[in-house]
Length: 296
Image 1 (cartoon, rainbow, N blue to C red):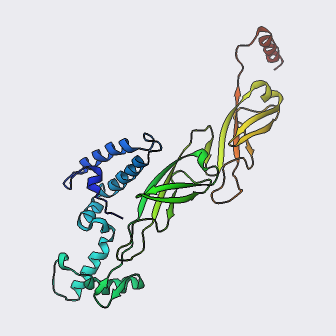
Image 2: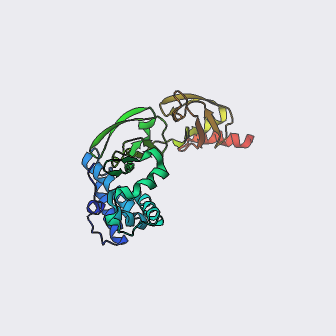
Image 3: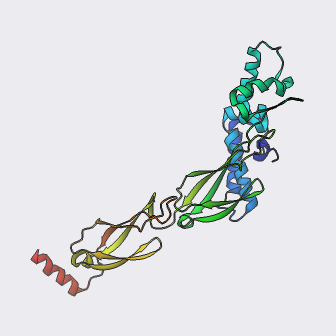
């Protein structure tokens, strides 16, 4: 995987201030945002790169490590500990530029065991785990009502993933081994995907349960009867009890949202009645209400 220059991604120099970084990020994030570039794979890739660059450079500590170690900035602490270990053993002082892999080998062997290997013929080859990648996936709530597969493009590589029904807004899942390539034969990093679920339906979701408010006419609330209500995937018949009060809540068992990674299991749908007062009454209707009022 080619090294990505985060400064170049944001179109700034290494001397850019925090204000410059924030300004550049906001401008590019708006330009490449998926909502403004639907089905544009190039814009999607740019948007992810911009977010990744901002995540590193907007953090002063991470930016300092990145400036010093480049693509291996996440391993900066291991390098520093190895250097300190070397000096503690009384070895000759030398600059980090002339520090060799052999100087680090004993430290890494003692800390991580078989995770690092020693080449007897030409010194030590320190294996580093690849960098983790972060990506975002924007979905509609209707997309996650059923388990489905989707292909993502990360760093010009297509990855086929299965999206389980019932995934949560803001949930992060890990795709093992699909991050950055390891250094010196080390393991690949992982890919972390954060899901953003857009809900444009009339149903309010709380995990696997759904909530909805429906209008109930005054006469049916008093006399009782039947009515059809919308569920997420169809309709259901409700029996209205006589003298139902405004705000009454009823539960439709199993008519909610799929439970995450529990095939065939669903939450419940809670229906709240909002009694609708009739308008544009005829004189006959008004007279009947006056008679009712007298009786009460």
